[in-house]
Image (cartoon, rainbow, N blue to C red; front, side):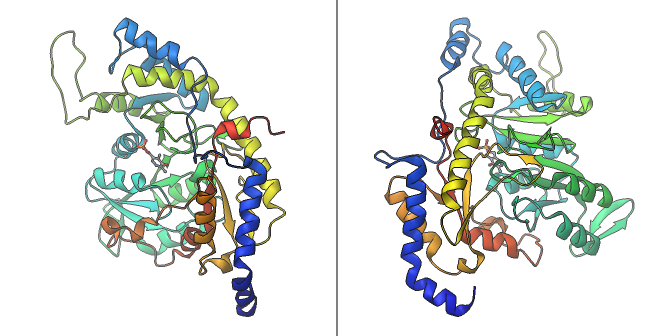
Length: 406
Ligand SMILES: *Cc1c(COP(=O)(O)O)cnc(C)c1O
């Protein structure tokens, strides 16, 4: 768009914003009541399973539902093992420790992510190193990362060292944004080429696949989240996925205070975490997993309806699943034209949508802009993430909104 066009666009900005709101209304209805961004739904056997925990007294961090939830997750995702924990951030922390991330290491993290991704790296005592993302998936840019790593990494005593900071680089965390699979096979090849371990933050992508293979099964270890706003919820919860038997056993051990199995003796062989998921939460999770495929179907139907509605609106694009993938469409999103990044249109749209009872929000503030990470190492060029930050709007995405849409 030229500057001239942008100036006349400024004149038309409210018309564009009105057309966007009308498109949302055409999908969601008049918005008589507030429509949340993502609501949990308990219309299956949730109450039955949770009541069973209370009736039997098995409410805490051991119990049949925890075992079943772990088995169901492994079966669903195709990972050999799943270990249920208290939340997604704890799962990520544990995943990084399992991957061998040590205090003082650097770990590659996309600058566009929920803060938990960066915080988990910090909690492992390591330093997040922020890099750019690519369109349309909004995950790490494999090609840009490959060139960047070739530029900054050197070999020293058999380790990969960032020559700019002198720190060892040990892992790359890929995040599948809003449920859309990142270019994961290319990223796995980049990790392999540079001698770095691949960890997946699959918190948003339960139910998403890349060429039929489930997100969270490409790296050495992955983290899921079952927070209240995720595709399925356990109230609060998370899980570590891995197909490595040794890592799975270690995940369970570390998450249960590194307690040595014994009928009555309390003895621990390292500094562990109290990260085990309680049976109550796992009971909720078992019932939610029974509904997962239905939720994904409904969310995909909603996404298709949004896509059709926005196809008729200028200056905006619906964020589609990347080619070769099947997304759970955890959070649906639209993007304004890049040329509108420096206008107030995004904020106008957010204000109008929220005022009209349709909850909408922008992408997360980029990690390198947050106070705790202002001085963290980063790629100089984070331009794609910076444009996405200024142009993206997430729309209401609850499964129920896709019900009854053809
Ligand atoms: C939800 C989420 C997490 C984990 O969140 P918890 O609230 O700790 O379960 C981690 N990373 C991303 C990208 C997320 O969206």
